[in-house]
Length: 287
Image (tube, one colour):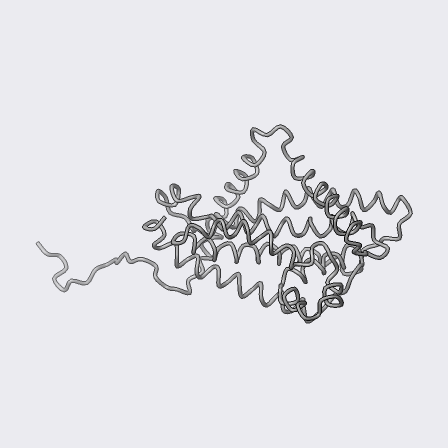
């Protein structure tokens, strides 16, 4: 017997198709799962390695040594009263956090297709856990930077942080959000265009050289004014320059440039979130 002759259903299950649905409330509801993924990333990061976390201390040190030899000794780039090695180490430490956030999150759908196809949870949790877990690696590299900082101060170098160093956590958040936003956009595109994965690996290397990592921002403006706009429109250049300004009191702080970086980062993050949420509804058919 038909108990509902009018055909009105008590409940109707439909897909969540709202384009502007950000799932931020669901992320909070699944915060325990987020912390579980963070813990998993940290444990698997060092499992079955000989040196474990030491790999993330060796890499910035050796890279800084190479940069010091090539760019400061051979190319003659000056860093004022700041030791070139410390200048490069501060830049590389900041750059490494952004680059690992970008490269690790840009393959989210492809790397986790098996898990995403079996159980539901807000997909944004996966790239977000990568950004949070990489804070441990960033913290270890900051300890190395502080150690060399103390060594150079004890050796008689006139080095001191700028008073704005207390706002450095804001810069770290900007690095993470920018890497996360770009990573989510690329991850959504990788579901249809697989070769973008190779482009990211190649592009991140080129991006480093237009992000003022191994030279002061003012140097490119003075020596190559016709092409300096490439660096000036790059938000990571202002993040790197601001990092050196806060930690080493070297270089300059541009309020206009920093404001542009904040606006650009927020726009990219929310754009990436929207594109990511849209792609998750159909990615399983294309991955």
